Length: 105
Image (cartoon, rainbow, N blue to C red):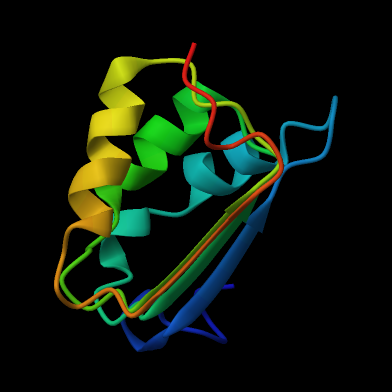
C-alpha cells in the first residue's frame, strides 16, 4: 500500500471490520495511522470499542472534516470522551453515526 499511496497524501480512509477476521488489527499492525496527516474523511464500521479507541487516539484530527461511524457499541467512557472531543472540533463539518454506536455501556 505504501508504494502506491503514501500515507501523507491520503485524504479519505474507510476502515471496516469483519467478524472473525481481525482486519482492523492487521491494518493497524502494518500501517502507522498517525502518518495520515492530510486525512479529511474517515469512515469506520464494525470495529470493537478498543479498536475505535486506538484509531481515535492516533488519527490526526486537525484536518478531519467528515467522520462516519457505524455498527459498533461504545463501551468505555474513554472512547466516548475521545469521540466527543472530535465532534466538538470546529473543522468537523459532517458526522454520521448509525446503528448502535450511540449507546454507552
